[in-house]
Each structure stands twice: as structure tokens, then as C-alpha cells.
Length: 219
Image (cartoon, rainbow, N blue to C red):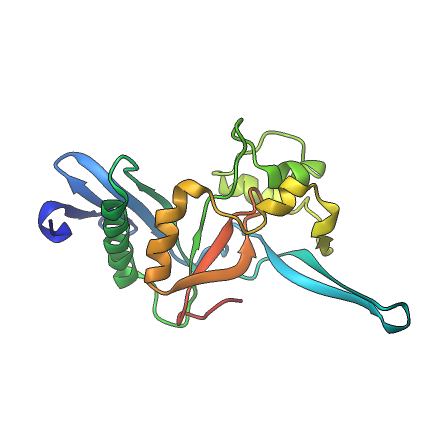
């Protein structure tokens, strides 16, 4: 069944919201944002590496680090990507791929990064092991991850110095750059369209941020 015949594309007047619908049912949707971080500062952790070596001691250690920064400021973003999980995986993949292609046609000109922040790992209670292992030590209040103002404010409380990942609990370390298993089909659709890991992760759940290759690349 052809997606272009079975499902209809619905777009807002400014092209900022896209959805595939079947009748009144929304099958998949997303928001396209431009110039993120220029009105409300956005922060991410960059995954880095440091080496501690001492030849006389026959010591060579490589450690992951997290460096808070605003590297992706000014990028365009595909956000709030939602889709019907009850469909079979092949249909989900086709649906997401076509929706992303529609968004790419409306994205900013080449040269400006186009990013997608993917959901990170959560435990059985819905909490983020990454946040519990790092962020909550600097802000113990309610987490409002969907509030841009909250994210901007809490980022100012997080450490600006490099954080050694090995100092975090094992669950938090495992969550760095990981993606919620339920989003696997979305990752496959992104990779099929030229997206790749950027080396940046979300400050709340540690989820990977993907960037479209050929649009500025990883930063």
C-alpha cells in the first residue's frame, strides 16, 4: 500500500507542524523548529575523551568526559516526533521515513545543522538514570523536561567543568548516548536518511542527538 495514496499530509500554515493522517486519525507528527537556542539558550553535553598516561608506570587510561556547552545553537530541529506504535514495524518505518522526508524539504538551507534529540533510557518508574546520577545533585526539584525555560534555567546550575563519566553510577554511565528501545524504528528511519550521532547528548536523560550528515555535520 502506497503511503502517498493511503495517508494524507497535513501541514500548518507556516510549515512548522507536519502530520500524516488517515481520516481524523493522526498516524505520525513532528514539529520543525529553526534557529534553536537563540531566544532561549539550549545546552547539551558533548561526549569527549581524556587520556592519563605515564610510561614509567606503564599506565595508560582513557576516560569518557561530559562537557556542558551550547554547540548546537542556531541549528534547526525536528522535535516532538510521535507515531502510532500499534502499527507493524515495517509500516512505522515507512511512515516515519516519509514524514522525515517531508520535513527535510522544509528544513533550513544546507550548511545549517538539522538535529533530532532522541529519548533516552528510563527506569520502571519513568525516571532517568542519567539525571539521577548527575543532574539531581545540582537541582533536586521537579524535572520539567518539556519546558524550554526550565531547561535553560537548570542548565545554568550544571557544572561547566568536564565531568568524568567513570565517577557516575553504572546506570547513569550506561545511559550516556543511549536511546529508548521503543524509538528503535525512528533511529532506523533517521539513519536511512543520512542522520548520524553528533556526539552530543541530552542534559536530562542522556539521549543521543542525531544530526543530518551534509548539513554541517557533527560539531
